Length: 148
Image (cartoon, rainbow, N blue to C red; front, side):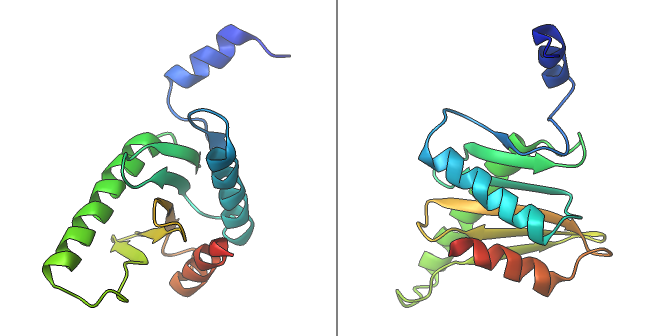
């Protein structure tokens, strides 16, 4: 039974856990983001969090988390800024045009956070995994196959 008050109360306690949640208006971008997350969950069922966001605005399109302490909207906003800054650093290096940013890896003591730009160059896929449970190569390959 759907009780609106209880649904609203749950959103006040933090992000929805163990469920893909679309953000913003429904449309093709959000539907694609939800499909990418389904693909990632299929390949990495033990992941901690995953999300798709827009690079220019830092807007969240869809997310999945296993823990309330992961706030996908904040994570996407900060990681979009990391991507923008890395692009500026690459411009400062005057790299050849064929050198394009495709992926960033942030390594923590127990976690790996991967950012992969999607083919349109406007959106990115974020995945956080426990490095004791997930092989980096497998995580990278699962994310790479979202491009097809």
